[in-house]
View: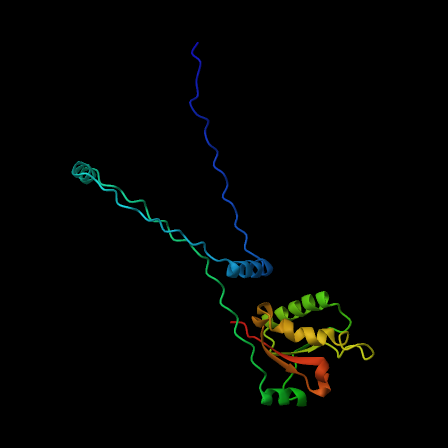
Length: 197
């Protein structure tokens, strides 16, 4: 009886890996890390040509040296374009908003929220306003505690304008201005939402 010998085991093809896309936070983190990286400098090698005898030169001509393949260029993923800078709301539009001639499409009240919660709620609110095609929204920060040191007063009132200047918000917002006293004055902001392209 002949014994069957198998020379190789058949390979089972692996299923292709699914590529998942990066979240906004992961992409922002990657971009900040990539900006800080500096390429390494390559040391130049100084090659001294050896004093070759005429016989050696003849053998070199007979056996040409193949130069090493140049390294393939590194592929750098295209970075997302920087969102445009914020622009102030025009005086005419601000006047129309304060007099009620231009409608405020939505309002968000951040009173009593922690900074972390307020940041998350504000980002979600502006993303929804952007996707819904709203133009002007009112963000109420409050003026802060009346009794208390200046450092404790109006944390959100100080923080919200700084948040709106961050890239994650600039892609959603054209600009913002302090609201008219009838809409909350220094405790509120008119925010112009960027249009969906």
